[in-house]
Length: 354
Figure 1 (cartoon, rainbow, N blue to C red):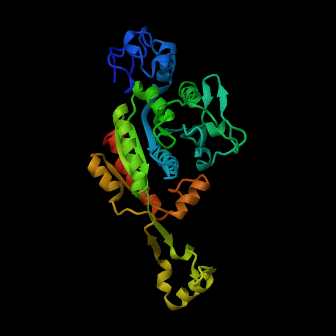
Figure 2: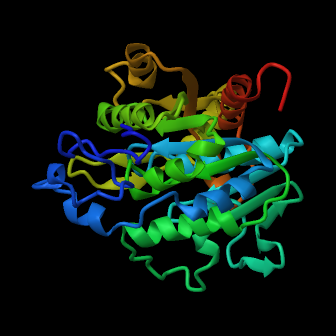
Figure 3: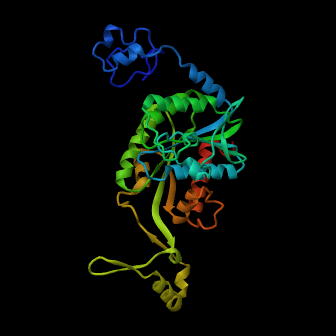
């Protein structure tokens, strides 16, 4: 909440808090006993000068999209990468900013592993996956891919600010921001840095089971508290789809020992029921008895953008740093993602384009 122009007041602050940017912050009688008193007393006062530099950089960016997830491993970075590929294929100028400081996977998913960020007189230059798709990630600043980034919140905020104020993107139609799981330092920092310049909204990626949706609800609450529009929720890995000819077949013994019988099974099908070889097997991997993301969106009054199946071919495309839209093998995931993106775009750019 705001307090007389003296900055946002934390929820656990004392009543009549003067605001953390006030000259009396941490010193006023009303600050006595507040858990934030020491921080407020020592924090720098006045507007953050970095925000002015960030605003200058962001002036050439038309639309900013955050991609969030409540839990790790739901395919958020895969979605961010494929969304960026899709927008670039539609002839938009696209930037993809990876602020998952401790687990940057975007360089691999864009086929940019081993390529470093360069500096010019205009600032840091993005690495280009295509002529109209630039990428910035801390993964491109670390020479050893096995090196862990062990940073506290303040240092994470510093590098996010550095990316925003020093990277020269040029004219962009879209800046897609891939965030880490949860609602912590990185998410708070990016919202604070971009809020004044305008964030078009956030896409939240989840899997169907309730254990994932619990954290999505928290993500929705974060967006509402931070004043960020929820563009919609994507349910990833809704079902597993796999061509029968790509499947492995096993036989289980009474002791639980598994024997591979793939060669025999495919030969048998080929001889006895060859028409089955063109089918795809479909199975429910995660429990969605609670209605999945679609029902949750109805209950919370937020848009449901659609479902993306768990497609081994999409996983392979991500591992190889390729667009699933150019891979003829992504028979079920590419159309699903295309439908979601076509549903999403009017919410951002209107009916008539950027």
